[in-house]
Image 1 (spheres, rainbow, N blue to C red):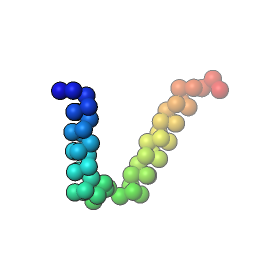
Image 2 (tube, rainbow, N blue to C red; image 1 turned 180 degrees about the vertical axis):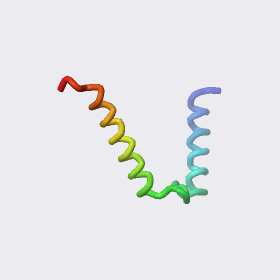
Image 3 (tube, rainbow, N blue to C red; image 1 turned 135 degrees about the vertical axis):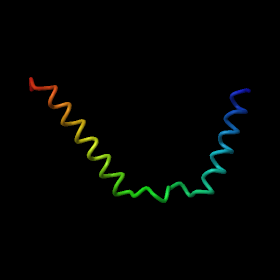
Length: 55
């Protein structure tokens, strides 16, 4: 399979998939996603500061 043919098939598949669902999943709340990302980043920041005690 050639690269241009594969790319054209992926573009067609992506265009068809976007019309069915509208891009957002019904069970995902933007607030829960944002708070989850914030908590994950704060946890990573806390872990990083625990290992970097020389500063």
